[in-house]
Length: 443
Image 1 (cartoon, helix red, strand yellow):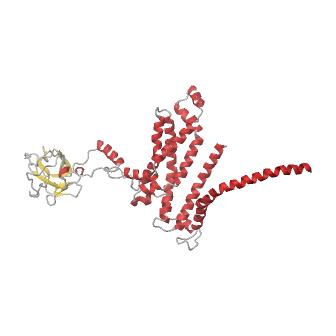
Image 2: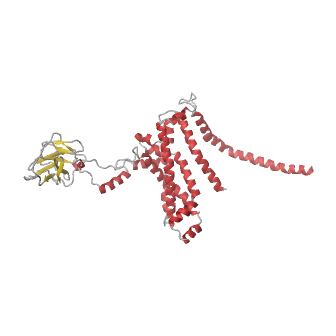
Image 3: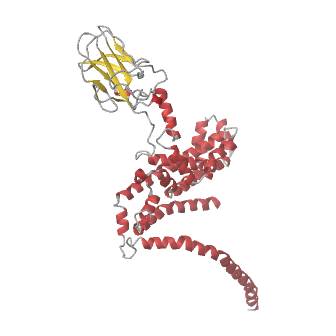
C-alpha cells in the first residue's frame, strides 16, 4: 500500500507537467487554429450552405444549383476545359521537367541553365498573362509569335504584289475587291488594253516602278499596261495613261480563250505586258486573284480553336522550371552505383533511362504530377488575362466560371457557391493523396 502511494505521489508531478505542456501547446496553437477556422473552415462551410439557396440567398432550393450546374452549356464547357487542363498540362510539365532534368546533367553550365528555366517562377501569373497576351497578338507587328510565323511563311511563299489594289470603276474591268479582274470586252491579236487600278499608296509602290507606257504588240500579239490610275497632286483623266502615272510591275496577267488560259505574262517596270504568238480569235485579259490576296498574318492563337492550348503554353513557360528543379533533386539522390552497374553490363543510355532512372524517380514524378494537378484545377489568372472577351467563354475553366457567375455579371452566388464546392471536391482527393505520399516518405 505504501509503495502504491509513493508511486502515485511520484507520478502526480509528471502528470501536472504534461498537463502544463498541453495547455502551453494549446496556447501557441490556438491563434493558428482560429485563423484556420476563420479563413478556411468557415468559408468552406458557408459556401456549402450558400450553394443550397437561390441567387438572392432568401429561398432554399436544395440541389437545384447543382442540377443547373450540370445542365448549363457554359458550365459544361468550363468543365470540359478544366478536364483538358488536368489531362494535358501536368503530363507535359512532368515530361518536360524529367527530360530537362536528365539533359542538364549532361550540360556543362547546368546551374546557369536551371536558373534561366526557373526564372519564370519569379514572375506572377498576372505579368505572365500580359506577356503572353502581347506575344499572341494577331498583328505580326505586335505579336512576336506571329512575326516569326509570318517571317517563316514569307521565306517559302511570295506575298501578293498589290493586296490593296482595286480596279477603277467603269473602266472595262469586271470583278470585285480581291480579284480576279477580267476585261468586259473581247480583245483580238494586234489590240491593246489599258487596265487602271487605284488603292495603292505611293509609299507601297515598288522602288523600280517607271512611268506607265503602252507598247505596240504586233499583229499576232496582245499588249497592254497595268498602271496606277492616279496622278500625284491632282489632274489627269480617269481611264487614260497620263505621263505622271506609274505602271504596276510584277503583276501576273493571263490571256483567256474559251475558259482556258492561252498565255501568261508578267508586267514590266513600266506596267506593260505582251502576249506573243496568239492565234486569231477573241480573248479576254484576266488578272488572277493571286495579285490581290491579303497578306498572310499568321496564326489566330487567341481564336476559339486555339485559345486553350495557347494559355496552356503560357502555363508551361511558368511552371517548367519548377518541375525540372524538383525532379532534378530526385535525380541527384539516385544511387550512382546502379547506373554504373547498368553501363558495365552493356545497357544503353536509353535503356538506363527507361528501366532504371524513371522507376527510381517514380515517387518524385508522382508528387510533381499530383501537385501540378492541384495547381491546374485552380488556374484563374492566365485564363482571365490572356483570353480576349469574344472568346472568354471558349477558354473558361471552373475557377473563371465560378467568378463570372458570382461576381462578373451573373450575380448568382448560389450557383457560384455550387461551382466552388465542385472545385473543392475535385481538389481534395489529390491533396489527400499528396499528404499521404509526404507522410510515407517522411516515415
